[in-house]
Length: 594
Figure 1 (cartoon, one colour):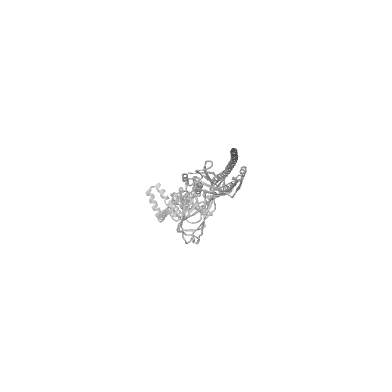
Figure 2 (cartoon, one colour):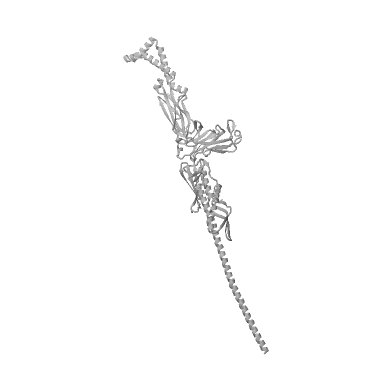
């Protein structure tokens, strides 16, 4: 019985243990389930939070990048606007008033090159960008996005490359929002604009306007080679003496998808500035070692100093040579003899030369070289006035005279060889009034002629008396009786000797009167008038002979510019009646020239 009870107790104990064990596992399973659910909930919550945080961070990053892109686009737009404005104005952003022509800048102003340097235009663009960059950070928009912004100092770096323009702006910017921060500082942009090449093409165009042979009628004739470099050069004449040049680059494209263009203006006015050139030490004794050229401000007057030249003024050294331009409308040579009769000057007048080009004053006046030097003067000829020739005047203060000169019409210049300094100017003969000089020789018989004429008259009277009976006898009795009458009468009255003397006097009178013209010319050769043609030209000489015959020397032909011509009138003989009656006869020669 006890054994049975023990077995029951053991069974009950085992059942209890099994129940306890089952409960434990149930509890553990429930705890695990609850823990799993809680863990899953916590995981999902954490994951959701992380995802939300990442999404918020990504959104903030996108917003920050949007701000960065906005700033960069603003900088790019500002740079593009600056480049465009540089092209429109000729390298300026604000054109100074004194050099402003309709919003463009003068690069050539009255013979002075005032073109800006390339690096100056670069610095202006950098300054312009720096002034606009702070406005590119729109704090209002940034605040709307919930960011706080912190900005540092900005700076701009730029390079004009061979094929583009690159701009780098350093601008530290920090955006923050709660725990989020974003920093950026470098903004880099490139532009497909060959600004350096365009500027160089414009520079070459401008330099052509300063060349001595610059042709205002065809200002682009020496720039054809730029077309091979994909540049188009054009010009306009909006006003007298003002030209506007435009250089367009076919390889440069703007943000508006157009070719980049660069403009500048040239005012081809007058300049009275002086150009000074220093000479070698001890110029009077120390000759130049190498040849060189002295230019005027406008480069249209060029004096070539050859090697081995010494330069002196009143026996002293010359430290420097100064060239200055002036623009008188005309110059005058005063009191010039223009008409001469034998030795006497009959008329003088002031000769006026109309000027179309500058007068170049070389100083010091009176300077002398030890050998001749070549002076070349280039001229502007928009109206084709060189058709009648171009000469050179030399002079000062009311005395101007053409000097020997030579034309080079193909290059629009005229040159001469000089030994010293004064003022010089090229002259168009087309602009001048036709000038005239007269040389006249008048034969006025001398006292000898009148003595001879008196003898002739006495002889004629004497023979009239002697032969009066001859004519009566001749008509009443015939020739034989007339001769007998004359012989008897002369013998009876002792007039035979007088008859011989009368014949001799008559013969002498005829001889004197016959040679009087030639004798007068040999004794009075001063029947010439000198003139100086301004240009090489075909000079016509008119000959007028009064009561006689004669000629002019020369008779006309081509006269060289600046070479003095002596026009002489020569009486060769008077007419028969004038010669034997001791009357005047003359030859007048008139030359017309420019």
